[in-house]
Image 1 (cartoon, rainbow, N blue to C red):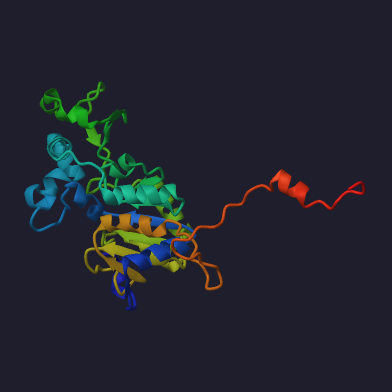
Image 2: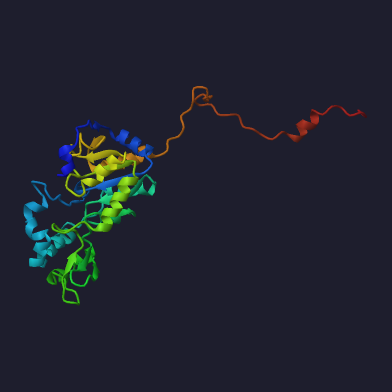
Length: 302
């Protein structure tokens, strides 16, 4: 948990409806979304710490998720990645699609994600800052050569036989996700801080955001005067400390805000005439030429 939470003065976080959330998005000038594992849970990707289906219930993080574990047994993290790509076949869900559409509307300006699954990009989001890296690419730990991964590659039976993949230089490829013991990429930190400073509304979706250094992002936004709104299944460590508002619900409920943000036709005012039901306006026709002549005054010779 972020060290700053220990010293934060309690504040009251307001519980809001989806309609209020849509209105806050409408009013905001610059929205940045901070997303976590809860966003991808509806795509079938288990969260790390879920007591029933969490990844760490089945995979020892000391072996599968630390840089030291990779150095000792580089094949382990590749086994985990193979399951992620081949067995679950995750696809973007309504939460990813909603955030991409909010970006297309110019409401969400950037997404800072702690997820490593590439699903925001698959959904169409353009401005995505990957705070913890990405599992869909890998780098040679010796020479830095890059390798792009695809779901089709993982489904090829020969892929599993060649794990861990080896570079031409003799080094092993490591997935570009940040492992325990590694630092957050400096570029991601700079860009996330820049977005936190720029926003006037930070949307915290599917994450408690209380593990450092990601916990610094909503705190930084709050200190710069931004409104912080959570979209989570339950209250978190941010609630009643950092966040101004919280919508209790699924990340995919964001799709409902798109309908609420659609332009509505103007309502008729009290003074506007309302045609009687079943009546139609009389047709307007051009004047008849013969009738016009008939109405002319008699000529002098008549």
